[in-house]
Image (cartoon, rainbow, N blue to C red; front, side, top):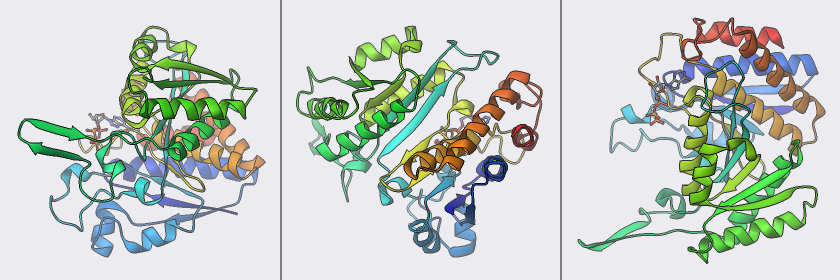
Length: 351
Ligand code: ATP
């Protein structure tokens, strides 16, 4: 029995997460996958019921689950400088070290390129992001008004575990290729260590090809010929930029799912924010949240050798393909006129 937490988040999270659960439950029912679903308070609703946007009951329960869905958090509207209104630091707290973001084009949806099918892995616990590399403080400092200094951290453990995840994912795909993106000739030690760990990992996966591309050239090639990439692994800040570039290639935020992966747990989280401008109208595109849930099933299936979870993920993939290619029940951002719930219903029905 799998235990999966449901964290709705704020704004459109209240609309798209239930659609993802609806679709996942339909797929689980078809394959006989047993799941215990645990709704947990987070964000504004957490504050209303428990006086905190990250209630202790949520943190304690998440320690016991295999994974969870996290809706977007409307943290931009939270009162500043009030410690009970925080953007829940779940990635850091649960050491979810890789953000996995697929970028995929569909023949009948507008995109800059066709036939794109890339999975990005961005390391998210170290690198240049100040919040990731320090326990307290900011990781940046200014010794005098003329100089500012930022730190960048790469560890063998951090590089090695994201590299392993990249090779594991590549192994499940047709092309079986990992592209390691760095800038070793300039950042000899930090990028050098990342590149070395990817090379070491490649030895354990002789069935997967390793390619190395320098980050600046990669940014250009990604725009010009994204079809040449399969699985791409990189450090935190490079990944931050390149994954947005990737999402832009195939139609933007509504089509950008994501999974934050740890050693023993994973969190399904779409790339988009809580979109307060469209919240409550029933027009948000549930694609990214549904496909994030699909990725959670896929990851759990792989980690736990669960045939049913892998099958459930495959069913969601095919149902989404069908709904998109028929183009009868798509939300407005995809050129249709369906509501969030109608699109979710259509995917669940296709399962
Ligand atoms: P945050 O800072 O919380 O990450 P953001 O500034 O990146 O948020 P979003 O909330 O992601 O912004 O919204 C950016 C734009 O994309 C908004 O106009 C929003 O309406 C639109 N958008 C975001 N997600 C969706 C979705 N699922 N369906 C349709 N439109 C969306």
